[in-house]
Amino acid sequence: LGTAASQLGGVYSSNGDLLIHEGFMSSTNTGNSLLSRIPVYMWNGSINYVISVSSLTSSAPTPSGVLSTTSAPSVSPTGSPTASPTTYPTQAPITAATNTDFSIETTFSATHFDEGALFKIHAKQDISITSLDIHLAEAATHEITIMTKVDDGSWSGFQFVTSQSVTTTDANFNHVALPALTTPISVAAGTSQWILVHSTTGKLLITASGNLDSVVAENSHLSIHQGYAVQNRYIYSTYTFNGIVHYRYDSIS
Image 1 (cartoon, rainbow, N blue to C red):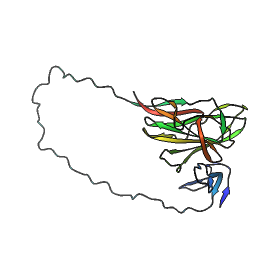
Image 2: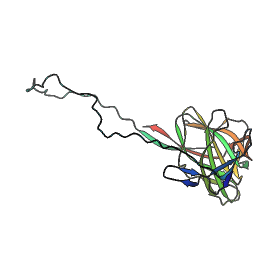
Image 3: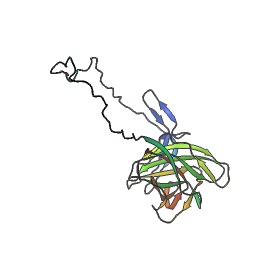
């Protein structure tokens, strides 16, 4: 049993220790279902939990050792100082890491629209995805949900990232820059990450493509691969996500 709610991710119960957020009601669909859940519902129940408290000490720490000298220093110096200073090697420049903003675009030449797009990003170095631009059809208010998971060969384990309301005004094509993610999606070098973008209106613009997993955009930091369209909570065919991926990585200067 669950209770219908209105704001995905909204807080409906809290205290000084934790918050419980509105989420999804799961269905019994199986197979390749990614969105086998019906937003937005509150879980009915109670949670029992334990808080761990670190032990406190009232006394100062014991010194780990005693430093002593074997003899008193000499009262008078052993000789006169050198007339000219010693030549020191030149200090090497210090390198500094800077968090640099980048972006990479796939396409905005849409051929279809659907509920969602599922695409994969492969990182060539450690990156953090900070926001997305997406492509929407129709003048409407769209509820956009983003989910993600590591590409580990399974379809289970998608994590909720954000849900945002977007209003579009053009009847045909709308390039929409979504707000920055509160928590960026981290992708470690040498790994791949699935990104799922879903719209409640079913008007997310995508582009038909031929080969699943082929590269549609690439630079020295990452590559974006062709994935799937999402319809009625299932994935099908091979489609390209239309949009821009904004990200950061630590560069050395």
